[in-house]
Image (cartoon, rainbow, N blue to C red; front, side):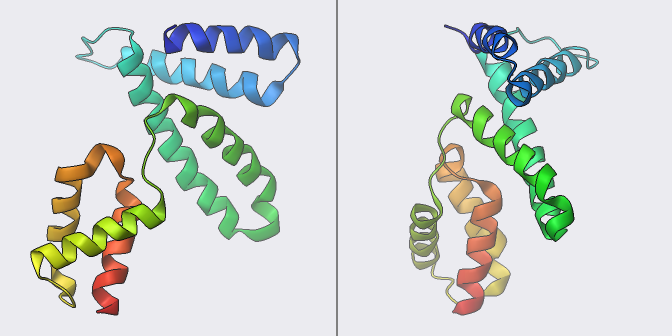
Length: 154
């Protein structure tokens, strides 16, 4: 079953169950798909790849926004919780990324392989090396943060 069909089924179910958070996030994904398709020069198909790309972009934006709400403390808790639900719910249609500990191990190996321990200026080189080899399995923001941590820790 395609992602589009799964989302349509999920939307019907959410509406019947009066599950507003689920209904709203599915509608937002459909809006994001419409925006992507209306961009000048769009020539792609309405397929799972487009849905994964749009969902991935949306999840990334919402996760970043969630972090900003968390920094507000109590004032941002409600929105942060809403966005956390959206990120978690939509992540099931995205390829799985390595967790932080597995990523940390790859960072250690890359720094050792490149021989750049304690060289803070090599962060871009290490990150590029990892993303080239394992990009689809890694969260770029996590890689960047862990590389900087490892290089500054020496």
